[in-house]
Length: 37
Image (cartoon, rainbow, N blue to C red):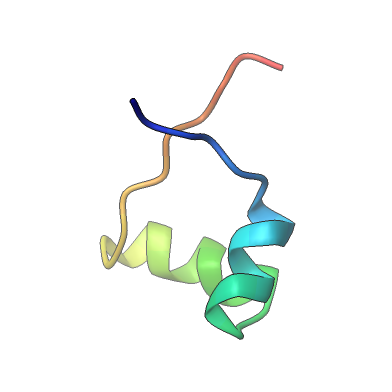
């Protein structure tokens, strides 16, 4: 079963900023699953 976490929690876990995660997503370095809400 997969677990969704917020972008803030992911950033803290990885030790990077939210902007970095968004950039990595745009560059295709990671795959973000987005929920409707």
